Length: 136
Length: 136
Length: 136
Image 1 (spheres, one colour):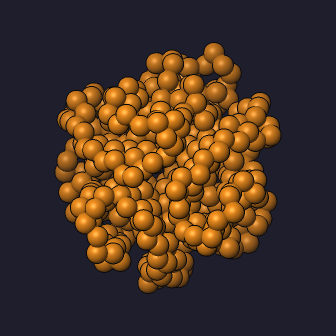
Image 2: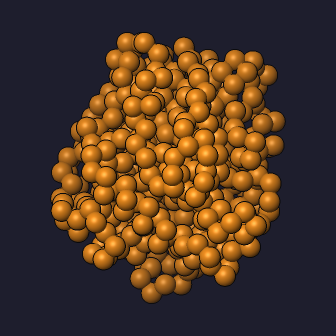
């Protein structure tokens, strides 16, 4: 069986944000096993899974991604949408646009330290659309 | 239900290439929901989703990936297949070998600015094999 | 149909390790097509697919990842778990926590040069939990 739902997240500031609760509350009331696909319909934001406890991890993610893909480099040609735009595109391909997470007995089967991050790579990215698809 | 098909893409030059149309034309004529997995059977090419409109994004992708993983570094030991080979392996793990895209009413449910990129990391990568698997 | 199983890998030293055999031996005895999801329940290790033949590729992966995300940088704030910890978190988001691989006639349908890597980013990561989910 396939469950599918599109949701719209509130606007987040640039950075990495835990959204595990927002995803879990959208899951249907099932008790079997499957896979949840979480897909973000944007090219300047991404999704990843990482440490859910210490906020400093998410702060360091922002720092390190900016070191990896710095803004305002002379070799960028796609610059008309702002200095944060082309780096945001590249970062979104490093994290990826979707996650695929096992569901066991109707619940996300992630590690105790794992959380789902929305990666907002734009300075003003606005609301982001997510498609949830669960087969079970 | 599971639909599966292997296709072979034409040879592309090194760089990032939109292949959304080539994928969509292979989908079966269905009207329900599911997930399409697109898997590339190679270790020096990759797949990603990014901006589908402005060619400069794809040009900047090539530039930035070459800055991230430069060729001809003294610390490479896997060098007998050419200076583009080991960087290509690394880049393919940064993009990943597969995409997982929601299908809604039989169509890819991607954002209006999203396109599927073939990432050709070799100078002469040749034709690339892709496996499409759709469950619905 | 959904098959799901959690396995625990033996502890590996820091680096990139081929685990294709360990995954294949866990697959059920089926003969149809589907997708295998392999999910690692940790935030300082990852999974990727890359070259399965020459050990030097895996050695160069370790070198290049350490160049990309160096340890002991002054801008890290999440440092209380050791100098390898925050870089390990970041690296695990670059590779990703899951792989999705086509299964054809009951076997993994990967390229002849492709293998599944466990990416151990900690100096002493210990045993790692993996969830296998196969729909077919």
